[in-house]
Length: 182
Image (cartoon, one colour):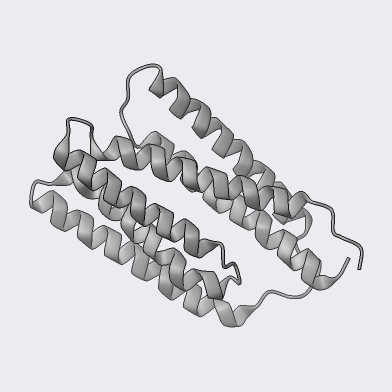
């Protein structure tokens, strides 16, 4: 197997690990009654299993293939720091304005937006549609929260959880799929 294939499979494992963990977190955000609560628990368990399998794949391929691209580390770190800063400061402003129920909307929007600069950095163009879909979930959560009795957090938790879990599973399948012969 070529170094590039190994690196891509390891990256897919890391993607499944990270997004599986974050899907589990999003499924834990909303307070819901049964039967939705049970479905959120099932989603959390599926996300956790996906993360574990992604971690196993990434650790099995650690050190194999080409060395890590250290040139991408600094921009990656800057993007993630900017994401956390924007989400944290925005959340503080919303809480201070007594609009804390819209914190999940802001966080989902920031998470969606952060995938756009990450897509070229991680060489994963599918992160752009994921980012756009998360931004749409944020808008849907905002509109629903403003126009109905359904909480924005419920819409965001379910929507973001499903999107991140689906992407993590897709990455996991990509990572475990046997390499095609050259």
